[in-house]
Each structure stands twice: as C-alpha cells, then as structure tokens.
Image (cartoon, rainbow, N blue to C red; front, side, top):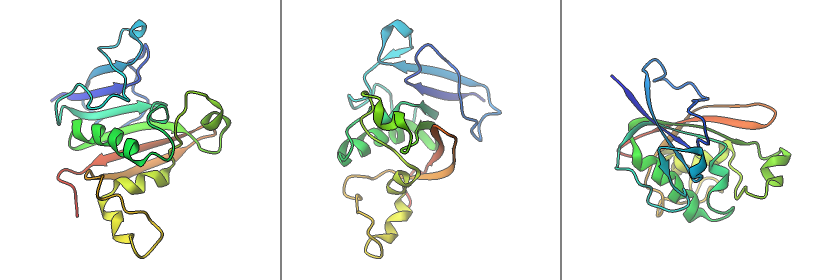
Length: 174
C-alpha cells in the first residue's frame, strides 16, 4: 500500500512536518508551489479554484504556513472555497495536516503576505456536527455554502505556530 500525499506551498522541500495516523505507510509526495524556481511537481496559485487535481486523489494534504496566504480575512466564501478544494481532493477519511501562525504572534499580522488568521476555533465551521449549536449559541450558520465535513483530530501550539490535523468525513455527517 502506498499513501498519496500533496504538499502545498512546498518551496524546495519534500519534508512532511506532521505525523499522521498513516505515517507508517511510505508516502508518494506531490509538491505544489506558486514559484516555478522551486521546481515543484505542480506550479499553481492556490487562490485559483478549482485546483488541478481529480476528486479523491490524495490520502493526505499537508499545508505548512500556507493557508494564511489564501483568501481575505472576513471573506467566508473564499475561506470555505479553499477548504472545499482540500476536502474535494482528499479521499474519504483522508487527513489535512498543517500549521499556521498563531493569531497572537507578530508574524500573523506583521507579514504583508498574510491574508487571514486561522485559529483552532476556525475549524469549528468545517465540522457539520458543530452546526447543531446554531440557534443555541452565537455560532454563524454557513451550511448554505459549506457542504464538506472535517473533524479536528488534534492541535498543538508552540511559541509561533498552531499545528493541526483534520480528518475528512465523506459523505458529510449530518
């Protein structure tokens, strides 16, 4: 068995920085980056959707310090569009592993290329089961634009970053 992994914003690296439950299976890594000088397998601007991959192509998608460069803070449509692309290309029960700058660190807001801040609470809106809280809490309802379903499996913080592991449930749970 082989696990197919997409590494987003890879730069010149093919290193997977997060261990997933599938880590015991050797990976076949596809790299994607916007910069052709890094010689990725695929040159692509992640802000352009759909991404150039078939549905259910990968067991894992890894995105380290990438997602904060996509969309625009406060633009829910782009937030869900980018996570939809990851969901779409993951196989059922596939994993999204990644990291983003912590919201309370200087580079989350200080880097001029950062377009949004993502916290562990942001993942609430990607989990269909959490929408049961709508009407009972102040949680906004995005079910009209979000049809995917990710479960936050793990997260950890260090001084600079939030690391996370999300699991894709297909079909989405109700």
